[in-house]
Length: 237
Image 1 (cartoon, helix red, strand yellow):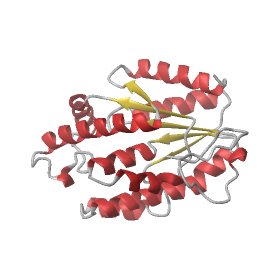
Image 2 (tube, helix red, strand yellow):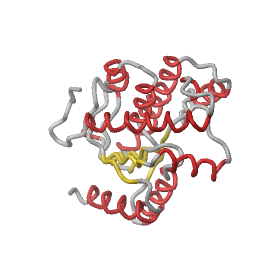
Image 3 (cartoon, one colour):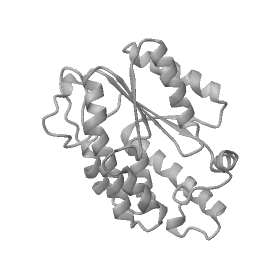
Image 4 (cartoon, one colour):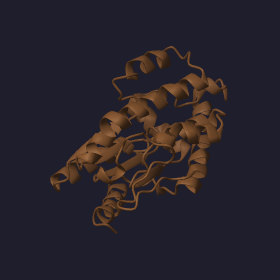
């Protein structure tokens, strides 16, 4: 994917981007934490917010289904389990685009650190597993800014099952890939779907070069590694 890289900052869009945005004005940092439900992603982001703000770095958080434009409609549609693959993809793309234009870009312009609780890679991986065309997805998310850092917390599917059941005593329909007909048994479907998602992420990593971290470790161990890497990022290493 061709990137439009401005000489002054190195910040770029993955593709066509958003017209009228002056990339050199976006002086903040965009950090994305990726991972399945149960990977510890949200816990790590909460810890990062506290650590960064204590250190004098103002933060803003974004994530999936947080757009005021479509989040409620997407929730209702998913609750009915009636979305086609293409409609689901476009719903999430709209949710992302709205947050990019109205939250991420303004926050970066103001010098904030933006922490994304999942970014376009989760959306692309989900669509890849559902058979969507890779080039179509690259074009769809060509509006996205390249983050300053992306960390994917990789957790084995069996461990994800245990963590999700311990948290909510159930497995989510969509996170189990039940719409794909992988298995009539939700536990078996979850294992197959999450394994496919891990393979999709590793394929995406070859294109986008993000950092894959072992999320099977203790929360404190993952926190220490994230802080070390982000300290280097903020220091310009």
